[in-house]
Length: 252
Ligand SMILES: [Zn+2]
Image (cartoon, rainbow, N blue to C red):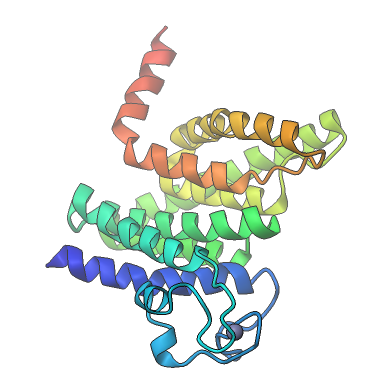
């Protein structure tokens, strides 16, 4: 029963995340402009906006002009539904449930906006950072919250130094502004030690993609945000294992 409820919530939030991730980079309003067909500008009615179901009913086509609707929307909705069920499956309802829910939501938004527009928007990122801090305060009190905020500042400084050094060394932008702001979330959720571990891990995850992308096209812009947030989520889920690994490595 809870899974069905979470999945439905996920479907609804999924279509909202898609709107956030595609409209914010273009500076379109989230509320004012109604959802419409990109081809014929036909304003969608409420029954054309039901996640997944509308898509299936219309066989992936606009009701008015017959233009194909991108598969992205139902796909994102289903992925979000799964992302809403996973934290409950792993943790039931505790701090980690809410934290992972926030992280996965941000992951979905960053994957769309960074791969599509090379942008990580401030709004979803800072809402996530504040939400995690509020959660920490509710569950653990003021001291751990202060430590988490401090870790966020430390990680931000580390990323900034890496960027300044990288820009000089490669003579081009190494880390984007969005990536550096994302570092705050690394510190806030993981602390400095695990945050640094996640940062290094992200480079390993991104490497195969970067190699393939540079072979395929002459453009050498590789969005790094998706790999950063993916690495953050992985280290969050496998936090105990990662801590053990770090302790083991330091013991050698
Ligand atoms: Zn149309």
